Structures are given as structure tokens and as C-alpha cells.
Length: 437
Picture 1 (cartoon, rainbow, N blue to C red):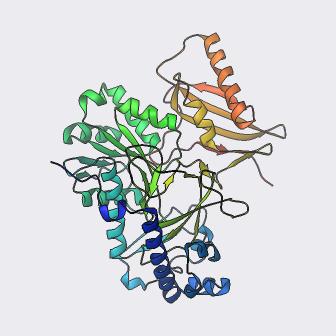
Picture 2: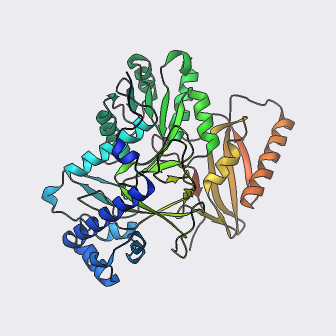
Picture 3: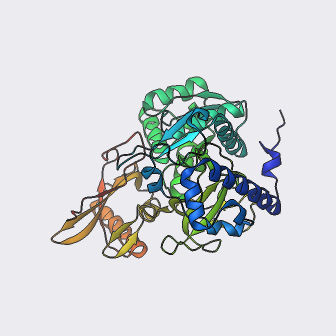
């Protein structure tokens, strides 16, 4: 059967001028909605002199104050809502392990639009109604479960809501149901392959897998390529966050050269995380997003803390929606060691270049004799080197490259494959054991 390359041609084929005209209209509508429906935003906008009548261009967006995660916690649970609770049909929230969770409300229309956005993402990479979609994300408050579920259903695929964990059951579903499309976080995709090898399952021979949607964890290009080689799939990077709705915010197309952010849903800014001033396209900074297609709980200039950049130029796929580079990390997850700013993704990028290493690693920061020190435990791959001098040379080369990248000399330790702790959720990559007084 012949299909259009676009799930929503009206929105996916807009020119830059058309996108910006639509954004301005939706921004003004959103501001009116927030001003009239949210006491929180009405106060903020009036104090900043950024009432709806004062916003007449996209450049005027900078007059609007930022919204932060702390704002969501301070107004917990529903203080930023722009509609009465009676008009909401679902909420999602973060874990709230360090205080009040962040809660986002959705109306029925919000949920419908969210499903459309996820379906658009999946369609863009080749998913069609004939496919079988298996979701390995947790359901419930975590948005990766229901977000992908409703988007896959909207597209028309047969869906397998397998949820997180129980890897043997996941593999049985792959083979029994003919799964062709999977959503998984990168660390779990690697775990799936490990168990396949243990069970003698060849993903190319024994499954029909062809497309993998990966996200939720920052990961390097080498990690993506390794996953593709292991599973025999095309792996497409996905970006989402519960404050924006969840998955469906931005997604790679088949070109795999950046994630198209749906600008009919969001206005994107990249700012310097220290000065909060905008940075030019191509320069890394903090991602700031404004929702312009949401009823229950619009967020204005939300500081995501994610570090990325807008990729300059046009995409060969023809879509003019801006492209975000893969997430470098988070400004609030940065490791500061001996005055040097380090992001875990920098370390992963080096490690994944070595075929002798597996995918799992753990960075430990601790204080030794009044000095901070970094240790990196990394699992060896199946290409085991039973030669102590060769292992020493490998350790020396990895340490050298890491020093060149992060300007710190860590201690690198090789551990047997499968020995590092495994998690059904996001992989724990950093343990900071330094004592603070």
C-alpha cells in the first residue's frame, strides 16, 4: 500500500514564514489563555509588563519571565493550571524524590494532540499501520508508557504494552508477535541484546525488528551505532519531557541528523545557562520551551535544563521545523571536579569508541586524602583480552583520551561484563560520594 511521507502534511510541510506566523498566533492565544485562566501567570505577566497586548512579535517573547521546575514545585499540585480541574482528564508527575513532584495536567484535547504528535514522530521514521509496536517503558505516572502507547494506536499499529522489565517476556513477545518497532531507553536496548546472546537469539534471524525509538537518557552517536549494529535496526533519537507532555516533543527523521522539534506545538529558544541570553544557532546552550498548543497547563519559557543546540540549515527530508542536536546532558547534572565542568556524555563518547568495552559504565566521584578523584568502572565486551599487557595498554589509551577530553585524569577499571548494577529505568551513570559540610 502506498502512503504519504507525512502524517500531518498541513503542519509538516509549512515554510519557515508559515511556521513563524502560526507560532505568533498561537503564542498570543496562549498568553490570553494563561492571563485569564492562571492566577500564577497573570501575576507574573503583569509584574513583567508582558501582558498579552504587549506581545506583538516572536521577539517579544523575551519580555516574558522564565518558568522553572521550582515554580512547579512551589505551586504544587495545580497552581499553574489555566483551566478548572473539572476540565482535566489526566495528570502525570515526576518521581518527586527531592521534594514535591512536578505535576502536569491534561484536558481531553491535550491528550489527543499529544497522541497526534507521537504518531507524527513514528510515521516520520517509517512506522505504518502494518507494523507491530512494542513499548518497554513503564506505564503510570511516567509519560513514556502512555505517551507512546496512544501515539502508536493513533497511527494504527498493533500495540504491545509490555511495560518495563521482564526481559525474557519482552523477547518472547518479539518472536511470537512479530514485533517490528520497539521503544526503549538506550541502556535497556543494550540489555535486550545481552539476553538475546545468552539465549541464542539472533535479532536479525529470529525477529522482525527494524525500528527502535530511543530516548530518556543522554547517549552518544557511538552508542546509537552500537545499538543499531547489535539489534540490526535503525535507531532514532527521541526527546520528550513530562513538563512538555512527554515523548513527541522532538524526533529524528530518516536522515538521522538532528531531532525535528514540532514548532506548531512549541517555541524553542537556546540560551546561555549563566546569562540567560540567547545564543546563535549552532552554539550549545540550555533549551527553553514555550507550549503553544496546550489547554490545561501551558508553560511559558520553561527552562528545561537540557543542553543542546539548534542545528543550522535545512534538513534533506524537506521539513522546515528546526532540528535539535542530541542532548549533551543537563546543566544541573554537570559534574564539577577540581574546577572543571564535566558531563557524563563526554566520557561515554570516549568509551564507546573502543570495541573491547561493553555499553555499561559507572562514574564514581569521591574524596581521597582531601582531594576529589574520579573512578570509571567499565565492563569489558565479549571481545575479551586475556592478555594483561594488552589490557594495560588499553587502559592507558582510554585514560589518555579521557584526559584530553575532560582535562582530568580518572582511574579506569575494567570489570567483567554483567557485573555493574542493572536498572529497569534510566541507567545510573554517576555516583557522587563526596561529603559536603
